[in-house]
Image 1 (cartoon, rainbow, N blue to C red):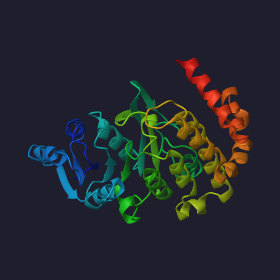
Image 2: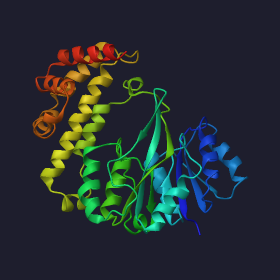
Image 3: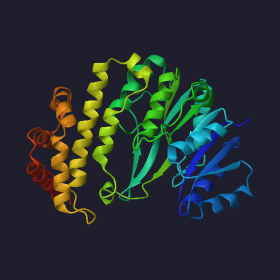
Image 4: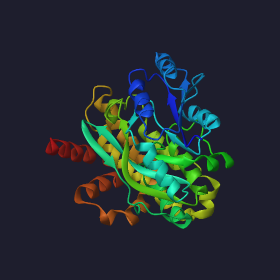
Length: 342
């Protein structure tokens, strides 16, 4: 019996795919299948995987034209035969006991889903992302509704599917899929749909997933990626029907507003960090447009009512500059902060 199906979408991951595969084959939980979806790679990713197929019959390879990570994962779900499903990105790798630890945690209480921590390396510093949930105890559907579903609305760090195992039966019986044509937040939407159906979960204080920030810091990608536009799309995206049934509309709007303003505050720092890819004038104009956006103006009063009093002095200054639409004030504050922290 296959205990866990691990789905790995692959697109031009030749540089990192070998370490990813090796980390999967070294799993202490042997009853796994590893489903690689080659999503139209133009490098030698396919050839690398094919070499490993000769060594281990648990590896499955499905080739398709490039359709994006959501469709690749959906293809993997279709072919998965395991009791639980896990996801790994091709440029990441996992510790040798990860799926044994998560599977045992799930089976102890017949959990629908298990959440773990994950490790990241950003700017040559290792960071472990943890969550404020009760550790290693069974959490029921009431907790999921009150704490987990709302957490997805106000925070981003639980969105990833890679630090979890999901009961395959729930995914397939409810036809839960990753959404197409969602430029940001496809993991979050999948999780929202799944956790809306989950009845029993567990959070364990274990860090076995290693996230690799391949492209580098956000400041290196601002010429290509419109971060604020993506946050707006998340803010405006309609939630699954059962979210609206379980959480009051006013609460949903409150949490989405707080999340949007937190993102705006982050992007002020990202776009005011000097970079060669985008001129100072364009970055200055970008922030000016962002803080004047009608949805930001709509969300600001909610943020002030719910969050402002708990902020530190620097954050209060930033949010006040956003409130009065002072791009120059934001520039001065972020420049001072950056120089002070050097």
